[in-house]
Amino acid sequence: MAINSEKDFDIKNLTSFKIGGKIKEVFFPENVEEFEFILQQEPNIPVLGNLSNILISSSGYDGSIVLTSKMNGIYVEGTKVVADCGVKGPKLSQEVCAAGLSGFEFMIGFPGSVGGEVYMNASANGQCISDCIKSVKCYKRGHGIVKYSKDDMGFDYRSSRCQNDNLVVLQAKFELTPKNSDEIKKQMDENLKFRKNHQPSLALPNCGSIFKNPVGNPAGRLLEGVGAKQLNSGGVRVWRNHSNFIVNTGNGSSMDVLRFMYELRERVKETYNINLEPEIKYLGSNKEELKIWQKLNQ
Image (cartoon, rainbow, N blue to C red; front, side, top):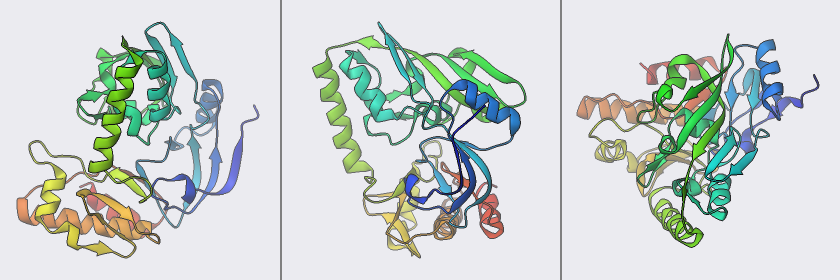
């Protein structure tokens, strides 16, 4: 089977952080059949989506990865919508708005893709992606393609059964609510305005929220309390409007980010006795960076 791939692929400009080195080989499957074929050949290969929630080492990665960006079909029939894992959130939000369907207004400002959003049960503005899900088609490593109902997915805050069962989301089926397109568009505009005021745009390269919110203690507030906005590390710093966002000021490296995350986490731990858990992912072969990443996840 001939599948599009590139070797020694420079991934930096595809990441929302604008950080990352060369990947040994990147595969770009266009459908489920191609995806399954790749995973049968390389069962443990990392699978990534829109690269909006991951820090890739500036030293690169000495291995192969799969990017699902070309698996981007959207199928609308009545109130039912099926979206492939590589569909970007804003595109899906706009497509269903045009069809007069409500439920994805919150996704208009999300830089991620459907696969990652289902995987982590993405949410914002009082909506979450699991609200409308009917079923999810996944690839289970070592088993092949499996399908789960919404109840079987174990959705919770920023989590699903995908994390525990090592699942890769391939496609999701949704049931949306009919609504006037103008009303949907108005809500989407309000959500974009809210996001603009509360999160940095990608004009300031960033990876979204850096740490998960502990129960009852927003990470941004904890980081604010330890003086995060007065700190920086090499080419990265905290965003001026919210301490749970690290922005690349132009020449930041993955090591800058990891060292900064570790310093921020240690300050919060010392002050509040709370261990912040990373919300972003990391991929790389740099041994020193891997040690810091391991400490961040202890």
